[in-house]
Length: 112
Length: 115
Image (tube, rainbow over all chains, first blue to last red; front, side):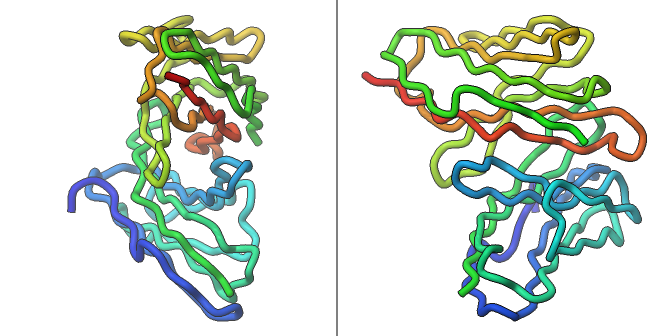
């Protein structure tokens, strides 16, 4: 692994199903983020984590949960998917408060 | 929390002309302001950033200016080329307690450079 990796790259999911989007980084970054990207709305922060063991809510946290058991992994879970969660999801990480955030390749999720 | 406003939402320029994108932010504690470029179907990638102790930064054809008093910052692209066509996002990161690592983005500007 080099950088930050998301899985899966795309998924079609039935409404009401549970889904976990995976995110792994090997840069030993403290901070990690989950964003959703919808046309015309930019990148909206769902949840973030300043360091392993801590998480916080972003702008649009409802319907999503995260965990940060270790430095490398930051999974995002949709407990019961709804069509409005159809979006492209990006995971990102950064080292400190004033350094670049690196993005994963994105996960395109369609809830039907 | 932080709120970042970005204008314009779309921008068309002739090749060789300059392009300017402007952003404002609300949290006076924010001290890091990156700009990202996103090409169609790809992930956002950093093109330039500026920290609060600097008023201007330049990297070849790209420059960013920051006015902390007015809480706004701008991206300037000179001598635009067709490959500059993309969506550009500004962002602000705070340094205030529990929200210190929140990175908030503007809604993006779709830049089209017309050959």
